[in-house]
Image 1 (cartoon, helix red, strand yellow):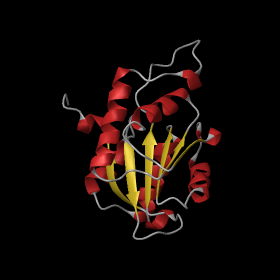
Image 2: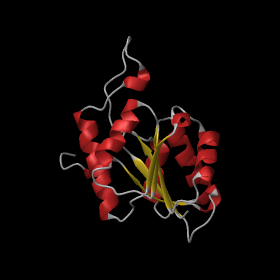
Image 3: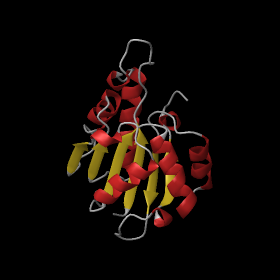
Image 4: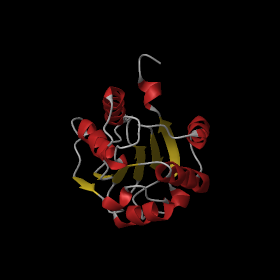
Length: 173
């Protein structure tokens, strides 16, 4: 593997009493943001080979929007991705390190914590990206990590190349 993309699902309806958290749907902005992120990945030639998706509706819907623009070799719903922590995420990445570029669509705090952990171990080629990532990972944001050549996953060598928030891609900023 030489690329890892960690994405938080796109914007969803607000949780309220009586709604099951796993059933929360994307709102219109979520659909727009997922489309913008997919377009950015295509433009930068960062299309993943393998995509792993949380079973929560909001993560699945994020991928359903994005897959219209991204051709991938494999996509899998991975039950363990719902509210997983950093150790579990590392194990899942290891299980899929055969992919040239692996994308995970999941949730905070796990996705944000894991992104920060990798960035702190390997560093970054973009100080502004590292600063933005350290502050928060809003819905729809994606952290792009890369290493030289194909290799097994080791957080110490996957440097943060960029951190993209949908807001930075919108024309109505």
